[in-house]
Length: 249
Image (cartoon, rainbow, N blue to C red; front, side, top):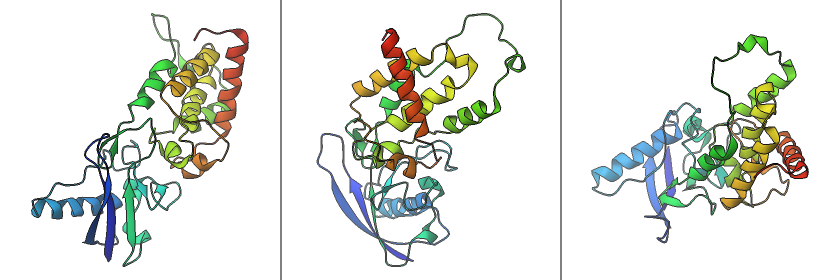
């Protein structure tokens, strides 16, 4: 299949970017990233600079392969990361636009690679459970409601790819932050710090420059792991609780 690619090129966050045209022969059985590899191999053979893009596991687990494909984070297939998207979902002669995530909190490093360390700082602000030193208590000694454990596991499947931010017209990180808040707050071990955690992580999210949530739900629709916006409501309750009782920031 013959494709026309319009790929975003940008040397750094301070440089002006532009779309670069490429024509490529691709096999329908290739993954999207394999198609990108072929394009880069051709560029290298032509002694041109290859396109910078992120990838790691290529198994839909790590969340590194974050691209906007024809205006959609991770491309047209629902519940699928870029690395698991295959070229059979495109047609011969298609024009494919490939862009980085667009958000003030994700400055471009180069081409299709953006700096998502703002997510790391949100986790560092409170996405953990503090424990006293000593021997860990046996996990089976703490009874956990099955429904709560299932909801916690669902929230924990967030891979931090930031598709929610890219999909949101306000570039909000509420779905990501709420998933990280929820998977700890739902479990007994995390309830002690639940309110304080929500307050710290939301405040850090705001400091990073993410936009406000306006309940458009595009984040849930584009999330490759199907994280529910119910987590946002849960985080808002925890945040309100922390604000009312005057938890430390």
